[in-house]
Length: 107
Image (cartoon, rainbow, N blue to C red; front, side, top):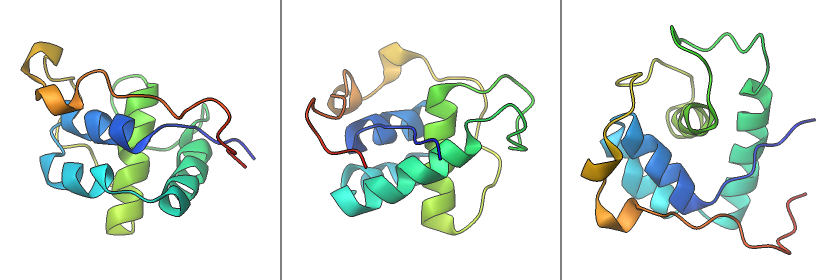
């Protein structure tokens, strides 16, 4: 099984990028156990036949956002917007989100 590994901060930034503002606070507070569940959900979507509601190509931050939506709401739905917001408009607290630290057990 494939997993897509990202931090809670990266998840929050991905959600903001696609205008999922209501889910950003939830993502910022994800526990390690919840992140592990999200990594598996994202891994299930990271395929060529992902069947996600997209008209543009699949990217890592879109997979992250879709996984968070599915985890939080119980099902996949279209992103609030498919085009990325301008990074210059991103709140400072979400910029340069740190990755999962090296040495973290990602199993």
